[in-house]
Length: 467
Image (cartoon, rainbow, N blue to C red):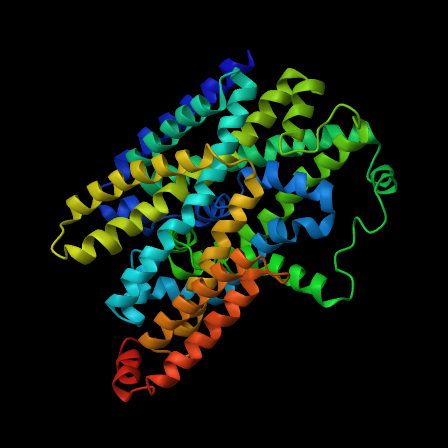
């Protein structure tokens, strides 16, 4: 019965994707839903950007191991990202009227910056997508009894199919449907747990001292890791194509800003529910529940009624599908618009749409291969955001808010940020590698811009473009 319910749910998603394809007439429709999304659709799509495997599987496992400070990165850092995008970036992006995040680098710094930003942003998505595919395969294995590898392949084929059909229209409409299931399913399971445990007080008494401490101890090492946790996704996911596509898909700039702020509140509120469920599971079934990523699904399958199982697994698959579809399309769009078109400027809109769709298939294939050799969902997500933080965040922010930023500063920032971060990762430094990488990126932007002399020609050009 459970298998039939899940299969039916998957077919509903395919049906929505097929129906949404009727709205796709050109590349803008496919990538940005024609910039026609109202607030409800735009907010639900933005909320679903990251509410995936790490929110329901990865974060609860980290929460039980390390307490509140173990989940600063997600959900707190992720909600911070959406909040900052709404306040400081959404209106700027919308005003430019561009198709991809890398188009901004072309407008602000030139074509060399565009191609390098594209080459950097595409690999940053592979870890993120792999995390979602790994979670989907594991869940399908539990429900249907299939091997994880085969489950990942079938699940990936489903996501790729409805994404290719309708692009951002498919993603936005399925996200709306999936958001309802996520909130409803988690709320019902959380409510059932509340009744079983008798409230929050018994849970708090059962946890060790310091478990709920929001701030670290007053030593430099702990604070450096704490700050790194906040900015990994909080700043690192700002320069990402999937966030950009949500921002640009709204029907106007005001709706875009409101959607980001509303989604930040939604994300933080809903993402706390899986953490609460994990505490309840540990309290109620201390001997039968593993502390790993599949703890909550295992608890639901063992101890909940069939209707609750269906609702929870529907919510879980909704979260994973919504994140995966947008994550796959984002780098594929960059491949088409900023890499393929860079070498073939005369590409027609029809050709570009074909390249993006082929890119979706290629990205999904690479991510499946990566997911097959990894185990930690939470770590895969962190790797993705750290990569974009040390390479793209500084050039993006400086370009918007520092008129004297130049192409030389942009390229040097990317190179120093990436090189320093990778070096520190390989040396296994005590302090977080991304803090060294981010510092190097800031210094690279300043040094490169000063070395190029803030040429009057560059400044006049930036002024004319309104940047």
